[in-house]
Every structure is written in structure tokens, then in C-alpha cells.
Amino acid sequence: MKIDLENSADVFSFFEENYSLPAIADNLDTLSPKELRCACCLMGVALVALSQKKTIWERLKTMGLGSKE
Image (cartoon, rainbow, N blue to C red; front, top):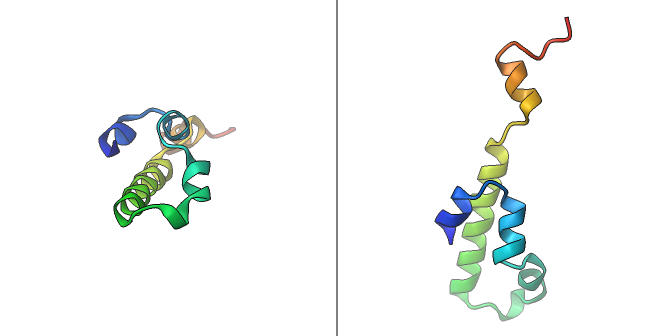
């Protein structure tokens, strides 16, 4: 599942389709240690993916094409 998340174009859609975030939040007390580790791992991968994504505007600015001059 981690690899599928890493290869996903949209992290939010991946979770919506494969891993119900409300279900995790509502059942934290009943998840096994293995399930909690899995959920934490997926959240970590998602956060890294989101932090590395740049908007088109940010990419243009980095390339020097986004200036308003």
C-alpha cells in the first residue's frame, strides 16, 4: 500500500479510495499496534509527498519564468 501511495498522483484521492481517514480517527482506540504503525507510515509518506509537491507557479518562479516584469 505504501508503494501505491508513493506512486499516486493525488494523495488525497488515494486515501479517499483506499484508506478511510475518518474510520482511522474514529477507531484509534481499537486499532492493533500493527494497524497503527501502518497508518502512521502512510501518513508520513503522504506528508513527505505533499511537502515535495510544488505548484506550477512555484516551478515557474524557480525557473525564472514567474516574474511579473
